[in-house]
Length: 590
Image 1: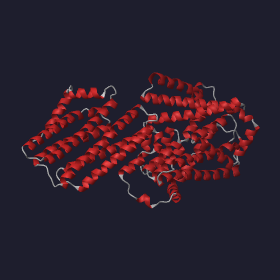
Image 2 (image 1 turned 90 degrees about the vertical axis):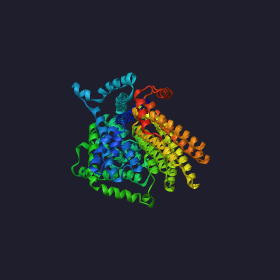
Image 3 (image 1 turned 60 degrees about the vertical axis):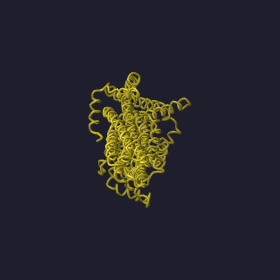
Image 4 (image 1 turned 45 degrees about the vertical axis):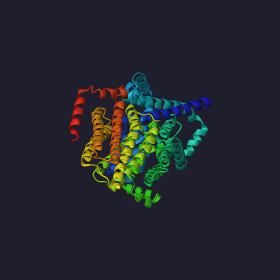
């Protein structure tokens, strides 16, 4: 092979690897995180976990990606180690789908329909359709479908280019000698292991092996041990991913390793034992692409069938490797658990990473709401425990803002779907509002604490007025959480009429306080505290209103914030007028 032949081969390999990445990304986006959510919601049934693990891996086209995700699930506490074992076994079976698709390149027939099944025949058609969609209608789900088509076409073109480039190697004596060396179990296994560890993908290394087979450069005797090594080599990705994770996550990575090592040892012992007795005639024959797919599938199904009954033993072996320590028994706070959910391993699957952000952002919103709700009881009786809880919730929302914001910035660099892109903008806009809500709740609590320290109380009338006002804000807070969780722009429209009522109530509470002050029924000192509480509630309402507008903005890009607000202030909608009247009748000061 001359320089240009090597260049063509490397170029084909580059296209093959890139096509596989584009195809996997397109499939992941098209699934919208559904495949990953299926994994997340597994039951305790190991057999079901195997089937689901196989199905998800077949869709996302990478056992390494699926296993890395499982490590992330275990690390964040979403999945138990016992559940992960079945998924890992299934992922190894699911990855064989890629080799079956690639084996279609070996179809040889004069029949039109059979020739059409050959990837080199239909890949150009998919490329034309995919590029056409990208050029003329590259939005949303259509764009994801186009990416799948183009990715598959590039992958198959790279496969064909690679196969054509390596054909001359079949006649090179040195190459033949090398593959004769690989026909010995240990050298062949090590060759497959190192190739897969280098590429970080067993599907990619199997594809290269099938390209060599298409050139007639390798026999089954060499291919079998290489395939065994490829299955062990794919464990490297999960092992590297588990560095710095929780003990259980590292155990999941070791389960993956032990499954493949034990499965390989058992399979090779049985296979070469039988070969020594009956002398398989096909071992010296040139390997074919479909034969590679058969060996790959048989091995992984054999390993899963053999080791599934001994899944508890694999779990115990993992615990022997990573021993349990006292720190694993400590109870962790909710915010600490959420920090683990935002795992960097999920960034390669943006749709699922966004789902994790949505979950944690919802927890942050609940913490902000609870910090305010606890202030409602302090009006009537100050409680030190509730005050400390408000302080803790305020600290939690500070941490939430930092970790969600950091994760979203990382996620913004990934290729997101249109829907996920809108959600990302909403979260970036809203987490600051939720953090400020908890700050204002803490300020309100401090006003009540000062009253308690000085043994002061509001008059009965002032308490009744504040209670009505504060509960109107609480209603607004609850509506805001519902709008934020559902990203419901229509429901968000209903918040502004309530915000208008809250603003009027705040002004009325202040006005009544001034009248009491003039009549000598209230002291200036208590007046300052009342104003502090009212101001805090008004600011919380303002942040709720801002979150509602943010939801509308990301759902309706054509509406600018100020234009939207002016339209609402003008009460142009009859429906909004009715909502306003309903809220005004509900929250009336006596």
